Image (cartoon, rainbow, N blue to C red):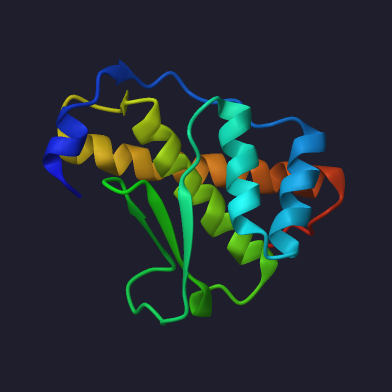
Length: 144
């Protein structure tokens, strides 16, 4: 995390809305077909921002299944760590939220370290709310 990246953010975070059901179905189908860039492009269109570039790494990362490179606006997905389309979808949503936060210049806290931590928590909430919506629509089975 680059401290300067979070220090320069101007807009207080005000929350998010998830996309409508038809868009969510389209995103799910794109991810299932391994069209991750197209899914990210659609999310970017929904939120009115420039899309992130999706990079697929075939290396296995010991630390994570994704990295957001805010300098180059890239979501790097370590595909070996994502064995199913649901895990790919979850990772894409997390990475997209990091990108959305950067594009919207959202500040989650005045302290850059705390802002970064809170952004990560909000990214998990974003992805979880969308996956919960898929469960409610009958596309996914809820796991405990």
